Image (cartoon, rainbow, N blue to C red; front, side, top):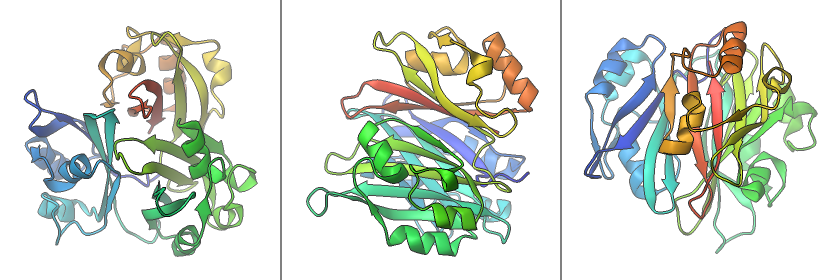
Length: 313
């Protein structure tokens, strides 16, 4: 099964805070692009990660050859045609930038959207940009609709200021574009808040289709009031459905695997070695045939770690 996202990377600030360095990545066998990325460093405003750092907002870049993108030749050789960047801020402090890359072809169906609210112009949230693969009809309708707080997936993420996962969005009252979603076979919708911009609120949404999923499992882990524990809140796995039953009343501390350590570091991470995960998580991942984890910390506008969003391939 082909993933809608071909490459995911994490870029972290250097020790002196003047540049972004390679942290971790998942490349799906695109070794040339991996090698180029591993030795690349981005200054403030430089390349896709540097632009996300400087603008403090999510970015969609559809031209990797004739733009500020630095790795154009390697991207072309790998067949990558679109890049997206999600900056992660804790207050005014940049924690990291997560980048995603997609490739155009007739089989790719899905969407990654960037929504924003400019309070000086509107009380609603509108789509700023997005990558839709082979889903032009959905793209046209997304650009024609706006969401107030609590409305649809972008509005719900905006109101709750937390990650939200919607199962079978074409059958959910929480997803207002049901007809469009059903037409192109959407199966899962996932939304993330993005703080950093002092003047506007931002949300990224990821909409999966059956044949080219964004991920094979989504999870939301909430930070408890003591800031010392994470508990499973919601999720969906293509193989196992809702994994709440298999996880049970599972609570993670900063000592417990990849997701738990985010309580300590506050940094996103991409992991392929599950040997140090809690037993119940490792067993569930093995049973579902999952091999790669992308875990992203979600901070509130007041710089508090609110949740961890995780998805698996």
